[in-house]
Image 1 (cartoon, helix red, strand yellow):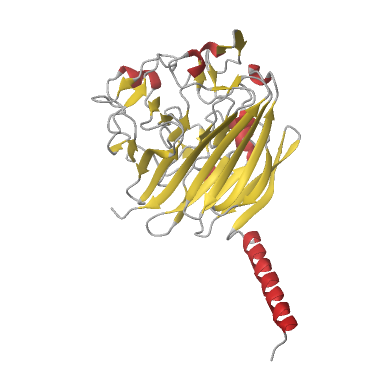
Image 2 (image 1 turned 180 degrees about the vertical axis):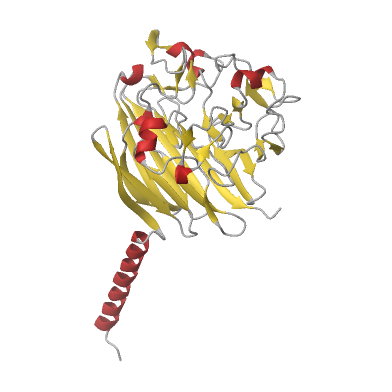
Length: 384
């Protein structure tokens, strides 16, 4: 008969062996988080973190700008392709990321008219970096700073937590804002993004993510044949400077009706004033359902690979941008040239210029309160 001590010793050795196996697995890039050097920015070390789930999907994220460098998902035959645009190295992002490829955006995603807003009776002047307007946090927004990071293991899958302290007055914004963003690559082939922030002074905040997707694979061609559904019956028209007019307009009978799956290119060249103002689609859609509740916002499908992406969010709005200003001057990953409309963005958000539009959902974060939103990009394949 085997003694209890021997049984306990065998059990302990089994646990140690299992733990060691998991560690080797993670370091081997099959499951876990791998960390490697990616260069330097602002005198700080920049790292690349590779998250791999149990199904072999992979997300590569750098702490410079919280950028999603690559995202590999399977097609209907099980072949993995990178489906987001970007660069092979940090130098590309440092020198030529005017398109904000893969970046975390803040303090305020999208535009603020003339770079000005009033809060508590005080007018604040922000950097103007998009003509006379403020765009995506200013000259040095959250996409151009080095974030602190902490790898996490959650029940859902591998995760990376990023934190950044935006000092009072940075880019003209009031308050010391502590932002925390967690990317989780779940074992259900989802990229989940949780955003949170606190402040020591009333301020405004509107965080989002700016990946350019091409479900056929990055650099493979334009996205005009992708079928897109957006769960919105209204959108916010813009003026010639891409600032919302304040109207909530019905999509019915317009090129903005994506309530049923429609090819992105079906109406993109229609003679429409709004398409002219945006040089294509570059508009905020007013999502159906209750703000603050996680719900389906959009769905995109690419027929040749069978890849389908669902976007779920707690946000009230979704910016659909059809890659209108990609012009062939950018050489991205694997030497691929990114021509016009080679990627599309689905940016969950509060509405553009909300600080100057009191009829829009508020983007004010009060001292002592907590900002929190969640967005999930969910990937499956279809046989159709």
